[in-house]
Each structure stands twice: as structure tokens, then as C-alpha cells.
Image (cartoon, rainbow, N blue to C red; front, side, top):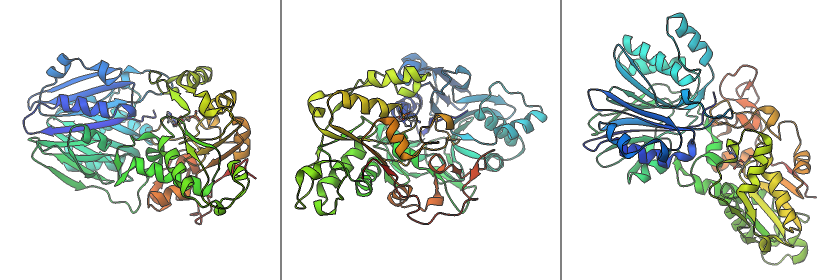
Length: 503
Ligand code: AMP
């Protein structure tokens, strides 16, 4: 099960926890639209409300009133490509000999089958196929034999894969980030309590202050009276493997992850995209909303660049300028309008429906496009559906040329770490060169950003990032796939930007 979700947890001194959790889930709605849930505890008993649907539809005022107590956890779940699946809505909760356990999970284990088989041997019965239930059973088992911190450590030692968890063991609220820190999780101070959330935007929503990210391999236990928190470093591997795609696509631009404001990262990636592959067209145009920050960085870098440094043949504005004086006259323009009421294209199960959804979702402003050469900027190409449709749309609207620039490297392999991307066969770049992808899109040129630009922008060594989807080499051992430990570390510059179409 590939689950790309949002998690939250809260412990307050006096206020009831359900409403702040509800607001934090609203702030994390982009991380999952299939189901939402909250589990609270009032010191005596656990309360849970979990349903399929958007946060605003799942909770009525009465539901929130019934979620008693100052502490709790929450979850929003992303739809898997198979459609809705009520059995997998979270938080997952169980009661066992030593109390109640609620668990909210963002990420994906890669050894679920092994841990599950082992637990089944010992008599555990499961009601879902999800990895979260496996974690819950393993933790419940360990809590019968060890104190809280040791039990979590034992469970962490058995789990392989990515997980940011929020856990409620009775009224003790915790957060854990997997030893490689693949998915984000941060801690915030609310003045009258503490909050854990997938993204800092949820802390902002509660008018709190971001304290810091939960460290890879760290367990954070919130005091049940909201007065503080304790930290336990339960694993300290020599490397980390944060997901770069959180910065490129998934996280909110106003979130800060591991010290980086996502919006600024995207703008810087846009600037580097220009530096690696300048296209001096009349207009720089973002795919809303995913390409906006990239396009703004790209256009800014373009407007600062001396004409003399721009190689000939990149687009056609240079040819028109016919001088090496000054900077190219590049306009940033919103030429595609978004229908806000259409859900993410990925929710559509079939390719045909996905294609129609792009046209439903985005419409060109003809006067901005007609007769112009356009640089269309997006964060990523997955199946190629969006870019193909938009290139056609812009051509139909009268664009003279459409140059596509992408703020991520080609996605060539699936994600096993919790992002619902696509299978290898569905990924347009998995078996095509950049020139072949350009041809399929019908674009006049196509260029992607290099892996190095991403590592440099995030100020991380490449082995401290999970780059599985763009290299096919993963930080975790996955059946049938290569680990990034097995491959020689490529020299800097090796994964240079790939471009097609420009001379
Ligand atoms: P595609 O149309 O299949 O090439 O997908 C690329 C478009 O979908 C881009 O506009 C991205 O912003 C967006 N996108 C990228 N990854 C995902 C994902 N995992 N789920 C939903 N949308 C995505």
C-alpha cells in the first residue's frame, strides 16, 4: 500500500484537543483527500472518529464535541489509484491488555509481509492489508514486554521503510520519524501545549511556533499535561534519506522542512533550471499551481541574465533581440487558468478520464498565448498526461512555439516510500530518452533539472537524499530493485540536466 499522507498530534494544558487537530488536518488536506480521522483520550478512555472524505465533510461540530480530552492524534489519507478504501482510513486504533493504541502513519514500509508473517505466527489476526496495522500490532506486542521507549525502539528495529508516525498510547502522545528521515515531521509550540505535524503550515494555522523538525530516528514524547516534551534518539544511522519530491511537488510552499522554506527551494530550483537550460521565449508561463514558484524563479533569473551568456538556439527571443546588450525581455505571465473545483488529476482512475480532467482543470488565456513563443514550466512529469495536454492546448490557442522546462529530473522509477506516483510502465521517462519524451509531448524543446541542482539547493550530499524515483536506486532494500549503496557514487556533474529540442 503506497500511502502518502499527513499526520498530526497534540497535547494541550487545558483546551480540548479535537478542534486544534481538526484545523491542523485542514492545513494538511493537500497530503490526503481520501479519508480523515482523529483519535483523542481524556485520561480514562479513547475516542475516535474516522471516515472517508475531506476533513470538512468528515467532522460535524457534534463529532468534534464528542472527541473528548486535551490530547490526540489525527490523519489525512491520500487516495490510492484503486479508489477509496474505507478499511484503511486512519488513525488505526486497537485496545489491548495494556490500554488503547492509536496510530497515524505517513510513509510506506518495505518489509510489511515479513513482520506480518512473523506476528501471524505468534497468533496476531489482521483486519486490513495495510502496513499501519502491522506497526500497531508489533508495538502493542512490545508494550506488553517493555517500557514505552524500549517498546518503540524494538518496533523501530523491526520496521524497514519510511514512516513518520504519531501515536497515542492512552493519553501519552508521541511522534517518531524513521531512521533515514524519509518523510517530514516537525514539532511546534502552541503556548498552551505542543503539536507534532507533517508540515509546519499546520503549526502556523494554530498560531504556534515551529520549534524544529523531529530528527531522523528520534522519538518525541509529549507530556500529557501539555507542559513540554522529551526526546529519545533511538537510531542514529550514518546517513539520511529525505524525499526530495516533498520539496518539488508534495509539501505546501509555505511549509519549512528541515530548515528550508519550500517556496524558496522551488524558486531556487527555478533559477537553476534557467541556468542549466535557458529558453529565451516571449513568455514564461507556470502550470498552476505546481509550477508557479519554479516559473517565478526561472523568470527572475532570466531577467537578470546578461544576453551575452545565453547560447544561441534556446527558444527564439534571442534571435529577435539580435544583440548581446542587456537581458532578455522575458515576461512572466499566468496564461493558464485553473478551475479550482476539479480535484487532482490523479484521482481519476483511467487514462482517458485523466486526459479529460486536464482540460477541465486548465484553460488558456488566448491573448496571452496567441502568436507568442512560450516557456511552460511545471514541477514534474510523471505519466506525461499534463504536459502533453497543455502543449496541445497552448498550440491550439495560437502559441508559435512551446518550450517545456521541468523543475525535477525525469521520473524513471516508482516510489516505494509513500508517494503514489505510478508504476514503472506508466512513467513516460522510464523507457524513453528526453528527445523521445519531447516528441511525445509535441513540445519544441524539453529540459529537466539535474539531480545535482537539487542536492546543491538543499545543501545535502546526494547519499543523504532519497532519489529512488529519478535514479532507480533506493535507500532501502526492496525486492527486485537496486539499493543506492550498491551503486558507485556518481561524480558531480554526472547526472547533468537532460535537454532535448534546443540546438
Ligand atoms: P503527469 O500528468 O502524469 O505527467 O503528472 C505530472 C503532473 O502531476 C504535474 O503537474 C505535477 O504537479 C503533478 N504530480 C506529480 N506527482 C504527483 C503525484 N504523486 N500525485 C498527484 N499529482 C502529481
